[in-house]
Picture 1 (spheres, rainbow, N blue to C red):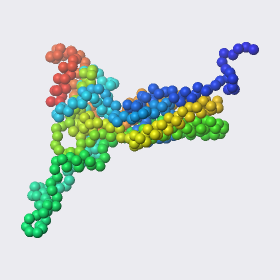
Picture 2: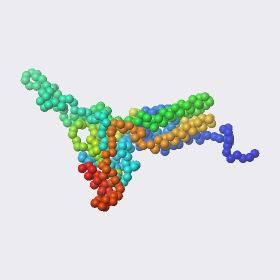
Picture 3: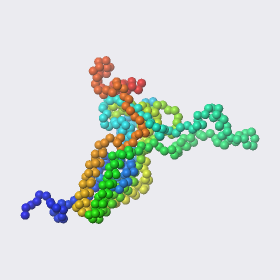
Picture 4: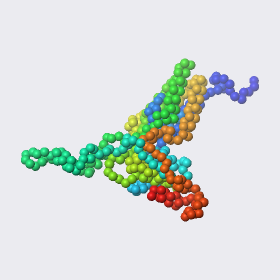
Length: 388
């Protein structure tokens, strides 16, 4: 009998076997980590993370702890008028003007960022604050006391101290600025598509019938839903709580390569995007998170065992599905971050003057006091001239 180079058929013994398909469920962590934000995936920032489905490398979600802040990039961020200095650039400003890509060394750009609406604006003064001094004193005299037991007023309300005002402001229940995900984010679309794919695989396994495949798909889908819910979070920004007059919030950013970015904005925008803290607000408490992660880990181990005992047909179908999902997740990692996050609350535009757009290039102008050479000093001087 002639020897065969490759196995044929799907029978037991020396024929094709796909027991290794269980490994496909946990391979591909690098594709998932590309959406990681300090150990929390971008996909968990949307409600679609709770959809029951198969996802590559679900163990990437099984972390013992969750980050409290969004990822940051090292750079010098300085308030031009107020002198505030921050050693890192927050996550969302890097989406508006990326400093880790397409930013030439010694280049100089100017951006103007404003709010499109007053949704993130700090609380305004009450109507009584706009009254004339005469009206205010009249109102105060009525509010502070009434005549009782003679001509001397008895105070009904004393003046609020500065400390009490600060305490009342810090304990306010007003919502903080929130950056949502795009409704039709590629990750949201991929989550819905993978959920439909999982439903199709379950129907196929039921019709064959393959009870082991049904159990495997059910447990791994349940594990992804549980861990997704445990990691569900929302990014919130720092909000100004006082309405006192402050200097302009213009910010200058210097990258390690010597590129400069000047941002013209008010203090509200500067506090939200640059000098404030971008925090991760989780919907599940830490103790419940640890319990859910433990439960998800158990279900994942059970599903891996079941996947290795499915029939050949379902092993092939599930294996091809994981290969396709790995490729799709890798493909979405190549997209720009503005496809995932909704920054419609801000309006931003490049207002770099024409004479400053080529600060990173050598010049043939003989009148140039820097001999036409691009340098850190020349870029700084052009930036100072632009800002005035």
